[in-house]
Length: 127
Length: 106
Length: 273
Image (cartoon, rainbow over the protein chains, first blue to last red):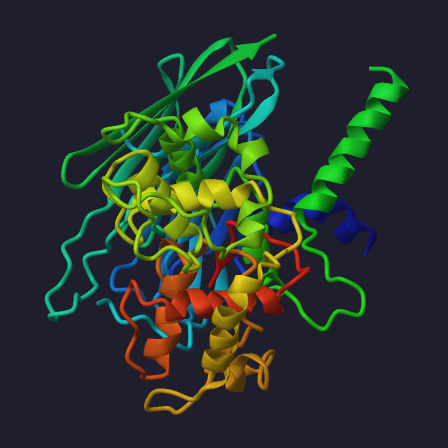
């Protein structure tokens, strides 16, 4: 048991189970329910030192049920200081949104969130 | 001249991370909506957004039709030197909008 | 930084954030603004002046305020100077009956003198009578911009309809309209907004229907719009025929709604789903 404890520590564990750390690194902040799919506020934050050697190069966001899968692609670098982007998106239906962060070291981390989209009860006639 | 609302600090300390917020008036017509006669309303969106600090690119974002109308973007950048932050939007139908804010870095 | 400066900074940050989130519910008042029927994300969108899409329209209105127009070559600012001072409280007391203005090209009063107008109507009266410029189209970006800019100057003020006795017959007409069933669905405004406010209609919360935030950036429209546009939405929703744009029934109904909302805080320009 002592030998086992000397060989196995937190860092070795992370090499064996990298997905768990990746799961915590990207935070996709979306309201769980939005009153109108036309304007859904979203914030993507990725933990990163944002140094020359280790920074987030790109953040890609995709959706599941809109007519096309892209939401946005952002390019970042050490000049950003923080890999945090906020914007507003259109969602045509209740669905899952996925954010993928690419680091300068060639790693990819992701997070997903489910949003319930409701619409106005009385919809306008465009006349 | 497009209607743009940009919020950036006027001053910052060197090395401080500051937030830039930008709103622009634009219909962001997806190209998937049908008008009153059933015909598809043609796509008309902003496709690219870039930000530079004294000419060097600090942020770039490609929009899709899934970005909401009157698009809002917030991003962060490290204050490097006094000068100009320039924002530029381009898109369908030859759309181009630019906006500059001056910033003093001490 | 001295402790006093830090203290003052903290105090102002707290004050600002208190104000920002605080279209506070008055004690014991059963009425509340549609602001409170929205989720936290949309409330945050409304509270942040640097991110509220309605502020794009306010900015456009601010520019128009200074722009000379019409054959009289006058800007709003030429008569009304600083809107923050002169327009304070205006949106909170409209609709109102404007002072009798000369009809186009003559000294005699216009034929519709003595009729109440909403804020958009008043702005257009200034356009045609004072600036001698063509009236702005309903829901046009220019008219919405000016309305949003003027309404902003009353933000935070209590709704205080004018106590003009001449308004009483129009307000009574508005109250009747509010309670009349109409359309294929045979519903009155009261059926939903008095009897069922707070309940859900197909996933959307039914608001009490107080016009505290107009003109609003409605997510459904993806743009700013007036109370008139919203009332037309309701009429179409009830499968009733929407009244013509210049129908005086809209102003009568707005007079009643503003009286019903008397004392509530104006939170224009608002964001609503």
